[in-house]
Picture 1 (cartoon, rainbow, N blue to C red):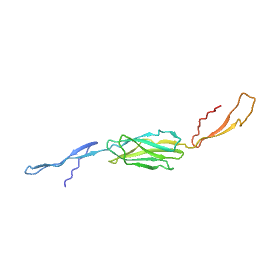
Picture 2 (picture 1 turned 45 degrees about the vertical axis):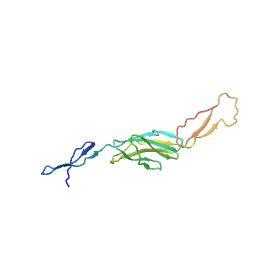
Picture 3 (picture 1 turned 120 degrees about the horizontal axis):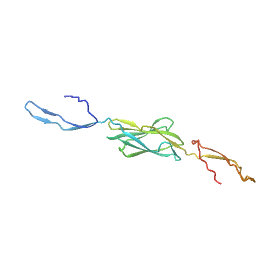
Picture 4 (picture 1 turned 30 degrees about the horizontal axis):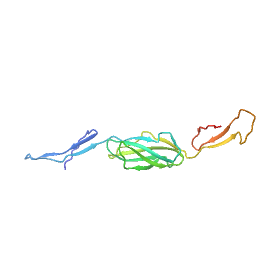
Length: 178
C-alpha cells in the first residue's frame, strides 16, 4: 500500500487515477475515480408562515426551501412548540431548491421556529433567524358597559362604552356598529 497526501484542494469535484510503469516499461492505468470537496453549508429559506404571522387555526404548515450544491440529507423543524426549544419533525426526503413542508397542529400561543438542514457531506446550517408565529383559536370577549340594554334617553348624544379582552392580542381592533 502506498499513501500519498496532497494538500490544497479547492471546493469542487476531482477525478483521479494511478498509472504505474515497471522496469520493463509495462504500463497500466487504474480505473478513474471521482471525489468532491464540499465545504458549503446548505442555505435554508423559511417561506411560510411569515415572521409575525397571526393564525386563527392551529393547523400550521411550515414551508421552507433548502438549497445546496450537493444533496440535502435531512431537515429538522425546531421550535418552542412544547415549551422549550427542541427538534419536532424530521424530513429525510428533501429535494434541494424545492419548497418542502412540515405540518403541525398547535394550540393557542406564540411560537419561535426554525429549520436546520445538513447535506450528505455533513455540512449543516439554520436559517439566519428564528421566526415568530402566533396561533389564536380563542375568540375575543366583549363586555358591553353603557348604554345598558333597553336604555331610554332624550339626549341626541349617546356615549358607548365596552371592555374587550383577548387571550393573546393586547391591541384589539373593535368597531362600533349602529
